[in-house]
Length: 208
Image (cartoon, rainbow, N blue to C red; front, side):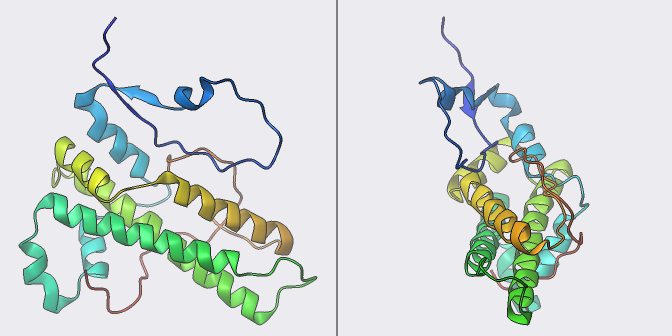
């Protein structure tokens, strides 16, 4: 029987270091069949961070310098969303790099290690807040289903980067018993433990 649904998988899991046996169909089973007319809502829900209430306006204020607002306004809704998602992905990469540079063979964290960890948390917080802002833009009707899906595809969004970020975070916190806020989005389902929450605090100035 023909199935007209598209399969989207936004629930990437961090790769396990445990030995595991998967059947040939396990990889495909991770995809969630979503009727095409509901894909935008599914993506927006995946981007939404239950621990935040970021608005689109807050993201724009944080990301776009005053001198660039006219140029920003000339972009389409898709182009603006692509820029936000790419910036969020860049924050993910920078947070991951920061965490993976932290040595995990020390008995106690040095001031430098604590500083790197705080910077990684800041970058992680920004990435999650930016995607939460995209979810808010969808809820506010600033971007529709087709536009959101197009923006996700054009930004080459990849949940594996978020999974890698969270793996690196878990490795560091396990060694030094640091606190961090659990990941609040639904892009993948992992039990994590505590972070200071909220707010967008990107580099200044932020221009697109």
